[in-house]
Length: 342
Image (tube, rainbow, N blue to C red; front, side, top):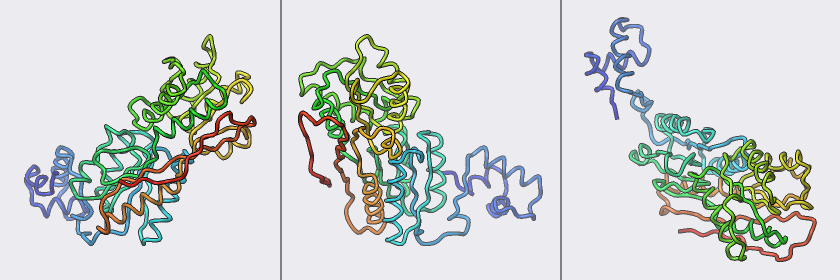
């Protein structure tokens, strides 16, 4: 990391002068100030608040970086984190990365500078999200929603089983041509859910049709475009699994615009809650993650790591099938609630 001493050498001034420039002191000559600021920009130096005289014991603050604040799933995760953290005497800083790697990187830098005690993150990418600086500093990082290899621990659902659970529900409704709209191809959560879908149709003896699997962007427009594309096929699917709730909104809009009835023309199952959508589509089935509990467990695990109270853990929770179809299931498949800790 670039230090204040590096900046002073580059600018040809003392470290004390660099410090005065960065704290806004009026005692510094304007030409000298320009030299220092040019060196800061050239070297990419970022003043650390701790190094600027605010050194103290580990703060009672944890950071929460999520990918989509508009998604009700993450809202519930946030509430779980906050409630659990407050009980333990910690405050929470919330950052919304909007599934944007560059925005996420900026927040990670901010968190690093602000002396947070630990971080909970729902990564924008399993491969491109970079927490190496935090790990190098010994800060605990707990991943939620998506596994992150460098993380200290994680709290996830078994997305492969969840994808199979959703698909088996449609199979139980008598569907034989089931489509799946999933997230970006590089997203490991999306990949796991579609793998569960593939496993379920294979076990049911249904031949997979590649054109029935569409990778979209986890947003409303992605679900809308993907659904219209599926409905444009010569032979339409009779079942549709949409792997996140915001894409399900777009899918429902496309079905409505094209006059496709649920469940008379097509059976559909979503992923995670859409409270308002149930008013318009009371028979929309879904697979629900225990979002609030994920947040609680993540905060509990992070604080235990901060306090060095217990070994690092990876917690895997089960998702739950919420069947709201009018017609009875041909086959029911219920799984007991459980948590696996490794």
